[in-house]
Image (cartoon, rainbow, N blue to C red; front, top):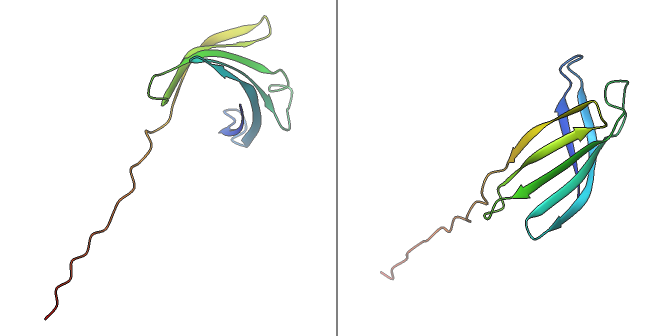
Length: 93
């Protein structure tokens, strides 16, 4: 799996862009996040390991940055929307 992300830097307020590369197998998700233009605070890759929910809307797990930092994460995306169908009726007069 691959993807991109963007987030606001809490120090500068700038938008940070990153690339995600990983795998998904039987509900287990593993990926690495690398910032596209890293500064001194964002130069190390972040490793994520988690589990995908049955409906595919959440990934919960742990992240690790080298040996110095780790924590929990929860990613949530909205469930897919159903298409709206417009119905019209006509009658011959």
